[in-house]
Image (tube, rainbow, N blue to C red; front, side, top):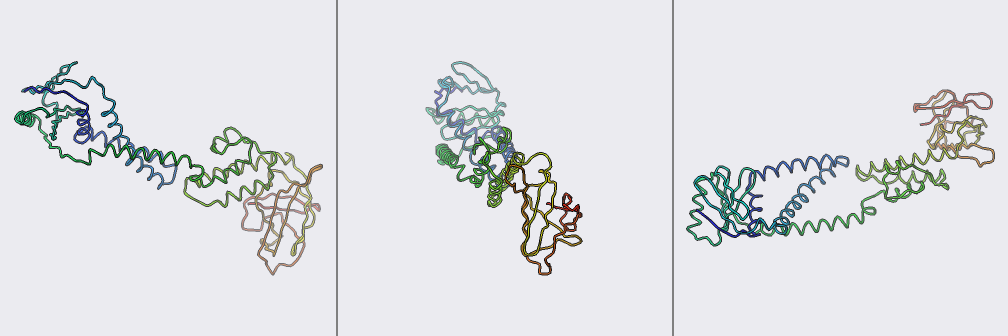
Length: 393
């Protein structure tokens, strides 16, 4: 039986649609592609919180990728069609197979080459094991010819399916293009407002980046560190402490921004190191310290302070033979005095919460720690040669 027809653009589109629905090879390939896609996106998103990774995986694999896939087929099979695929076609149904004849080639396929056949209202579709197919349009064919074709195909191809038409399937590609355009617009709007809406640390980032020379808020912390940091000349220790407090008081959001908060904190540490490297001499320096409060009297004593030992960390002082005492107000401010320069503030210790059992007395600081919070301490001696211990944590 010989069937002649003119292959048109709409014929290729119908074949493509039905292949995605009925071809076993196509459905199997798409299934494994989705599995790999879901696993890959989830693994790449694990640097963020689990919920964010799960949401991103579902968004891309269940919404964005299927839409892109359908739009790709729609554009390819509707608009970008090679004209060589169109034109006059001849299909000859023989006892041993199907012969396909076009203007450029002639092919013969055995019946066992095809594994399934689908009949629609206007077409017969034949699909092979590789997912490829051919279409036989019913237009311009008499009803008895259609019956003969159906009978012949059923006789030689084991799997026969009747296509169920759906009006929804016809409008889905157009709807998907509209949804894709809508998502692209949302992404562009979202990207424009990223710094304001998506970065809860934008004000803290701007303040921290402002400590350094030539740093843009568009740069990442890693990029800034790679280029190298230089502290602004007019930055003081109070500026660094203020920025640190601002970051510390920033609200927690999700794991992604908490990680970013930690990265910004490392920049503050670098600013502090650069400040002390600039302001403190490298050698040990002798300084004089004194102070007095309601319950405590600190006798002047001298220590040799290595700049590396004094940062902005809080400290504790211990009385000889006693646990740590609490006073109504005990404030000790430490400065190092240099010739030709102003006194440099290096340490501040305030203890509140009054202890009525404490009587005014001279402060004697033991060489050994008597408290339970020991982590690290340095021992010195005062002007009288008596031991002095300043413990830090």
